[in-house]
Length: 242
Image (cartoon, rainbow, N blue to C red; front, side):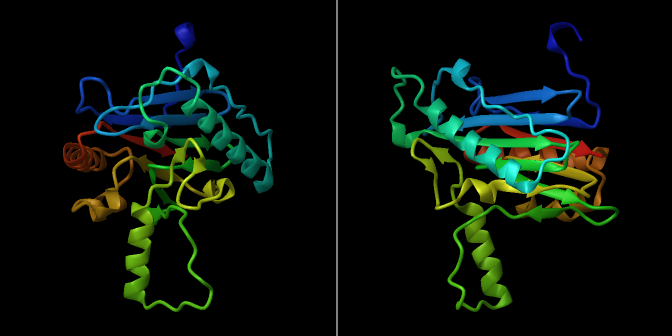
């Protein structure tokens, strides 16, 4: 298509803008024939974001036709390394290195794999079941620790609030790149958002609705607006159906 236009009806994005400078800036790459979508954004502090040399960020993303999980894990490691290099690519960046971070979600929809790094909440549906949250990776508890259901729910909430993005020294919170790989084979619909939709009043209805429905869109945008106002940041939700 002219000017690099990509026509992929199965996947779109809802963007709620709060800041004039577009903070955080979302970089979205879509590849039509291979059904690959990559979303990347950088964080800083108090509305400031890193200013890298974007032309240096060129990690490979091609996996082949039927990759094993090990191949996707290798790709996750390569992207973490590439994000680290991106955060330090501009020697004139005024933002302190300790305040720089990067988050990324990379989908191979046709193959059924994804790599999620950092500030993205993912919800998937298989068949006619409600959407369910795919929890973020987090530090593991010692094997001899026994939790009640209430304690486990509290621990999962704590893990969900941990920073899991890439800093200049690599993944934070003790996460390994291999833990960021997601198997989406069998998934029929998904929402991927910078907003924690599962913590909003409209979540039961969002979970029960088709992701491209008007009801879902309205509830998701309401949730994005509330979260965006609270944190003074733009919000993005990616929607996909098989």
